[in-house]
Image: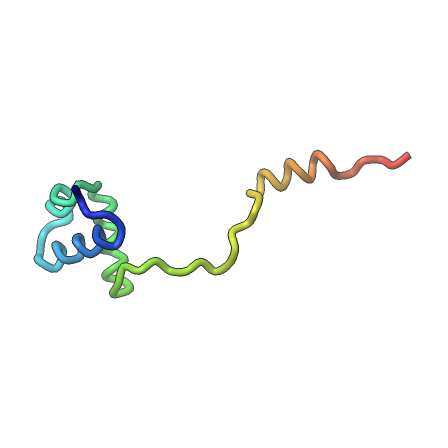
Length: 79
């Protein structure tokens, strides 16, 4: 079974340090070359492959959902 999660990233970095090409790594690991490329680029830029924490809580509604709710319950005349 191919590695997953942190093991996947570690395996890709180890193969990269062994001077394997991105295409060779993608065949060995079983992931797309784009996935391998992104992990290697992140490692080169930051020196690690850890995920950054989010800056805050994600919004409950998307912009589109918010517009729909405001459109349905906004601006009604009061008689």
